[in-house]
Image 1 (tube, rainbow, N blue to C red):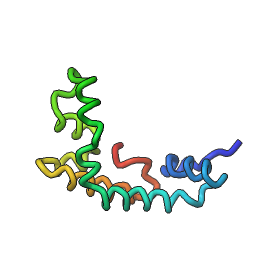
Image 2 (image 1 turned 120 degrees about the vertical axis):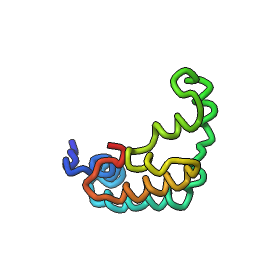
Image 3 (image 1 turned 60 degrees about the horizontal axis):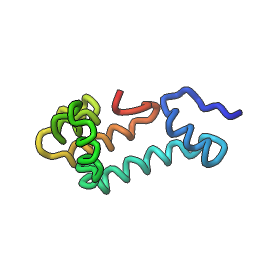
Image 4 (image 1 turned 180 degrees about the vertical axis):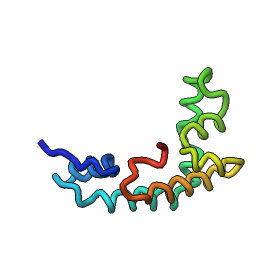
Amino acid sequence: MNRYSPNGNCLYNAVSILLKGNEPLATSLRLLTSVELFENSEYYAIPPRMEEVLSSNGEQFQNQNNAFSALLSDESSKCFKDDRAECINKEAALNLRDRNWSSMA
């Protein structure tokens, strides 16, 4: 049974173990995740399924802005005004922090 290092990279370590059987891919996976977020921030700013989720959870989230802001870390939510893509870029930058399990902490 493989175990991953408890070093704050647990999500990326786990995926690396799944793919390769060991942890060396973790840093690359973290970097590639941030690149994906940077390059496609407009796509992630308005997720295609958000309307579907909102209609099924209408009582929990009053509108798209409330739902979107619930997905952001405290640091990124400070930039949230009307530019969702900027918030996604901020999350991508925060994700680059090594040994940080998530920017959403």
